[in-house]
Image 1 (tube, chains in turn red, brown):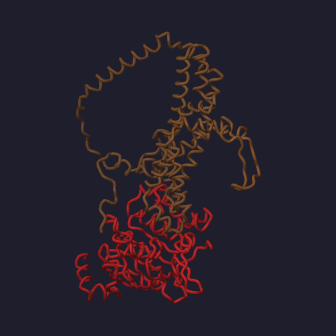
Image 2 (cartoon, rainbow over the protein chains, first blue to last red):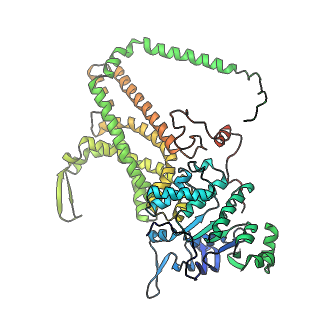
Image 3 (tube, rainbow over the protein chains, first blue to last red):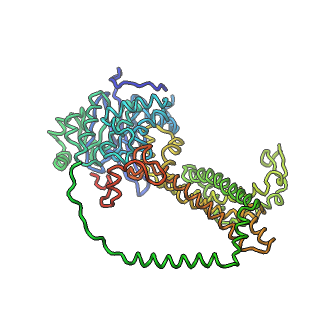
Length: 271
Length: 321
């Protein structure tokens, strides 16, 4: 594994960055089983921003968590950058579950930002961003520090590097969380309702960082209720309801001319 | 800073109860001191003499060795047991459960007696293939001396209690922390060592300090092994020899009290260290305000607002679905 600092550039390959095929997810078993994802098919092109909309309980977050193996899918397949997630297929087509260490390596190439930030509270902003490059990539502390300072500057927090998360506002914490994910030079970034836990006046600063990231060519999947962000930044909008993709397309088409009554209903409530 | 208007000047609420209670406590304290000092039966001269006796001080040394040695071993075992208890592997979970069940469920005194009797029950210990040939054989008496029997007995018993404390600590850490670390590609061992355990220490340290102080006194039970060099045994022996048991009990009590006080100071600093980043910035920025009792840098604004207790500082109270 090379500890190089890879700039985010469109890759030569024209295959989608993410392909999701026939994915089902069932939580629990027997009578308590809950069928959360019911046959999801989705392509995410390289360098594109896909926004996933939908009412709560529609399976948006679960889909996102399946992409980086935080949840194990029940059926179907997910490929990221052409690599099957969570399994190895041998020559006879038999699937072998990957060892947790191999799954950790797959995850290290995907950045994730959580609704509730999940910064490490016992570490400063700088230490949060340095943690994974040093511990996972084996980068030297000095190199990780330089890179972390760059990233914190990029998200506008160069004056907060020595602060602990508890000393930062929600918006600042979420920007540190974005910097922390970017420190691993991910080829794909997942955002799970990144602004839902923020006070309204702090939403803008986080969305601005995400918009900047999208412009730099990062491939992103964003679960959000921010319709304005979807309209401005998304290349592709997906509307989910009850574990299935109900409608998808360009933001202009999906948001302004929804054909599906459930989507019309949802937009009327959110806007 | 903008100019402040004239602050409120008002007479404070009268609290006569405070003055009355202070007077009562003072009188009671004076009576207690008087009763202790003037009573010749306590033989304070003897207490003072034996407080510095070489056998007593050596007893203090052995008590400290037993306390810290057994706690160190118990902490290592307890972390292993707690991790096993939370493991996906049912065999590991079962072994941990059995260990805790057994060592918590039988009396420490009995356990110490058995460790002492080990060389009678099994005169020889050997290394080799189970049920097969033996490579090395030792006499149990040479390997498990009274000291090691005492140390192992205390440590194994304590590990069962500490394992539950560690488990509670690990469970107290937000599962989101593990998820965030996983999402960064960290492996399980690293997540435990670098993310979960340091945060769990906040919950683990106070009861472990309690256990350490308790262990200090539990070491007096090693006479069951029998191990006869520690503080309680040493002072009792002297007390019986010179027919003055009470002054020697006081000698032991004073030493235990002194060591406990030192342990409490140590615990204070440990709690400070593992509380960093959690107390709403009361420790200030990194490196700032780390002095012993809160002197140092000005606390952050958020810390002051939090300390006032007039607001609820929970950013997750309102979360859109």
